[in-house]
Structures are given as C-alpha cells and as structure tokens.
Amino acid sequence: MSRPDAAQEVALPICTSCRTPIILVEKGTKFLCPKCGVIVIWRCARCRKTGTNYRCPNCGFEGP
Ligand SMILES: [Zn+2]
Ligand SMILES: [Zn+2]
Image (cartoon, rainbow, N blue to C red):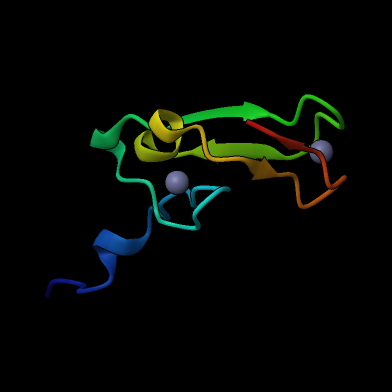
C-alpha cells in the first residue's frame, strides 16, 4: 500500500524574497541573516539573478 503523501514529507524551502518554493534543481542559495544570524534566508535562482531584496522576518534586516 503506497502513501500518496510520502513525496511531500520533505518540505521545500521558501524563497524569502518571492515566497516561491525553491526546487532543488534550481540551485537556490541559503545563508544566515547577516544581522541577527538566526533566520536562514533562502533565495531562488531567479531572485539571485535579478537581485531582489529580501527581508529578515526576525530582525527586519533588508538586503540585496
Ligand atoms: Zn525568489
Ligand atoms: Zn535577521
């Protein structure tokens, strides 16, 4: 008996800039917030390319 929800057990990271789930093949990037160091910022390949700003939900730091 197969479980239809098994494939969704691994949650995709959400791009902090555009809120789009990052598909692993897109090679999104992640890094800790440079200000508070608590929040992991995710950026999808598109936002990296266009330089979309992100905003830390913890301390409100904004950066390119
Ligand atoms: Zn994005
Ligand atoms: Zn922060």
